Length: 388
Image: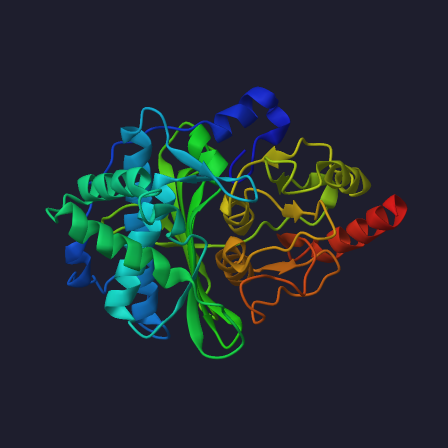
């Protein structure tokens, strides 16, 4: 059925939605030349949308380029190189490469803007990091077609990665970046996203999410893949094909108009350590939802709710101590809001991006179409009260 996940068509259809396709990689602009690249101003968006117009164009460019790096790395690696973070999620060469490319572009156009990024270069430094550093340098150089020496490229890449160590806060403007949101999905060849957002005085004003493996039209799961969504505060949310072609048309998107929760589809994380699947299932039953949940990694879940493929995204905390990171939610948050939906924590409080690198004032995340949002929050509170 058009515009909806075919969740009620059985597990075979759900598998189709999540299946990865290794699409051909578009040639990427050389890393060094990103400093002097002339941005295409025409994005087929009405010229009256002047607020943050340059930032919007730069962010789209950065996410497109980083997505190409990720796709190229995935195709070039026979055995994907990984490290292990303290939170047990894998870090890939593509993580470092994508962050380097995005931060290079941001530095060129907005040199005074700090960045809150997920990765730092400590695992690439010194003799202990030499092998991984060389792998990152080799792959980024190969992907971008650059002719820099190994030492020059390594220096630029490490410097770019470490631009992402800003602490965040309530004043001024800064970017937040997740170079590969959903790293495990990336490694499986499933859903992942490149996410970039601009925060001004503690509020998200711009968000871009690139989803290389997400079908452009969910009613055609075997069709073309690669979606980019972008939203600027007060200007609506738009979808376009994830492509280096600046002439790609953008389409205004909106959340679902479903009013009965029994007709809703909900998304949740693949990994049980990211969201309480058991409580999610209880909430779904209370809402009368009979369709199976759609599990996918990354902020692709936000993208799916924003364009009406699903109505609800639940991310209930699995422990009292876990705190969400701002880069995991900033882009999706504004895209949902600009598409006519609502986002909050499990108690209905708006997400607070003014505190620093984490959402320490919030517990869990809920995103839903506006018409059913209050019912979802009520069901969450009822379920959690029973569990306690």
